Length: 427
Ligand code: EPZ
Image 1 (cartoon, rainbow, N blue to C red):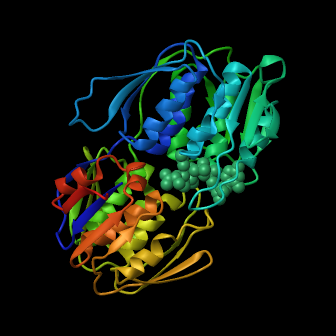
Image 2 (cartoon, rainbow, N blue to C red):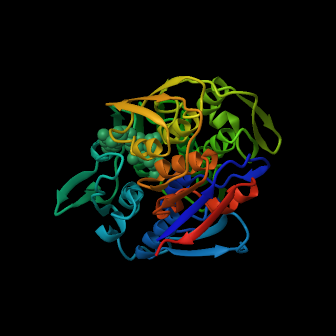
């Protein structure tokens, strides 16, 4: 296992390339199952989760080729060809490594008329059930069976009729599975109260480029007119708005500034507003989004919410930044039940954070001190890195594999901004 060593106190400044969005890529990749023609994804981030997903697709008989990227490039181009599917089973040993594997259920069901996927367990941040995925697929006409830790979905006489479903709560993954199942259904499907995250828009835009007929993209109601087949496409994965927000917090906590290359403020308005409320200066530019500090950081109060609300995936990173604010901030995590794993580690670095249920009270402190800390989940790990950049002395973040799941070449990007960071083997 690797660790990252950060010698804090350096003011970050400069430009950092923001990679393709992990959470868009993980729903675009399984769409290759929906056609027997090549699907080429550009700006695919080099992340452990993408590698895992590629391996899962290979298990199904999907060929994948990486083209045109030198080792020093950020991002990759991958072409997937699902000419012949040799397996429609996603096994436990792969699904347990990455919950997003559940996103093959809808497209595999649509393509093969039957799909079997290991139930993804919970994870550090919550028990993460998939009941809404299954209810949505049933509403589209699928028969669902649960046995021996697997879910099996079957389309009656090999094709889904389509249907109507109103989500009782917003779910990104369940929306994605339902959309991918509905685009080649025999009839029309209407989905209410769908997730509206930009990654869903990216999915719908790419499916449209493949020949799907989807109305209401970006709104909370989608009407999908099933088409007999989809064709291949070449599509550029959207920029990762969470990575962009993470580097904004990293630069800001050091009193620095950063040009987030390729970032689009219109995809991260709630994050942008939170950063402005915290006293930062944000300026959209042709090449991306500039974030600068002007004086002391101000405390803020906010709650996470489904898009266009403040992203739960930004909560830990913002909390790290607010540890250095002049005053007390109050954050409420409304999406996941256990997403404060970064708090004890931040407090070991001299932060003063009190949690009670969904609420975290962040008392600003005059300084943080470096420490050896343990990464627990992807965004919590980034929160510790952000704190380490401003801490006095050296911070070692262990179990770096958490970070590698969602941040492409983190130490290289931080070094681009002038951070004193080093990656070492933890053995
Ligand atoms: C996606 O997870 C993201 N992952 C998460 O990012 C993100 O935090 C989350 O959406 C919310 O924005 C990917 O896109 C791969 P949900 P997902 O279904 O789809 C409950 C990261 O750090 N729920 O919107 O799993 C669920 O327990 C990751 O990049 C049900 O109850 O999130 C949660 O409390 C972490 N039943 C809430 O809904 C279901 O069937 C929102 O979950 C599904 C979800």
